[in-house]
Amino acid sequence: MLDYALLTPKIALELARQASLLGDCLLTVAQLADCTFFLRPDRYLPDAAPPLFIDFTSGTATWVEPGSERGTSLAGVAAEVRASVARRAVASGAPCLLTLDCDRWAARGAALPTLAGILLGYPAVYAIGSQEEGAQAARCLSSGGLVLHSLTAGLQAGRDPSPQAILAYSVPASLLPDTEMDERASAWEAEVRVAAAVAQGGGWAWGDVGRSRAAAGPRPVVL
Image (cartoon, rainbow, N blue to C red):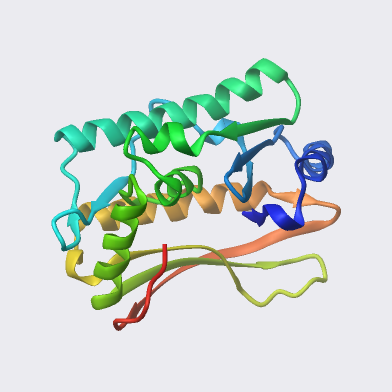
């Protein structure tokens, strides 16, 4: 994910075209507010299981029940977002730009932090539908411990091989341990390992992917 202020859509599309010439899949450039995402549309299967969602509207962090009204709505949002990524790529047949309307999805209960988590494929995603819910979530997250799940990888081919964090998400410590969460995290790691094994460009290749979990005490959190 790159900052929009440093990367215009035109430049992002050109980078996607260059990467597609070197790789095995066309890329989709997704614009979400001030963020730019480079996505592999073949990884966004509409029928894939939705992430686990974490709710804060009760004043504490809780898992969203999959069969509840909110769980069903958020699962539908995740499926539609994935489908829009895949559909846009099929329609264009070339690296393309997909602009996601934050207001539209917020009306469905999925504001920017939730959409970003879905796009990045995180196994656990904060369920935030408005600025008020974001502020409430930030208060909850700032007052309790968190467990940070990170994936690291080094660059081979003569480049710096030291592991660098490539993806990371957090889960409130009060919700762990959780068997389903552990299973989702392991599946997420395995999928990234497969993607990293084939990610090449100009002689660069990802090295081994590792996963770590680190506990952190209460600290200010801004969403």
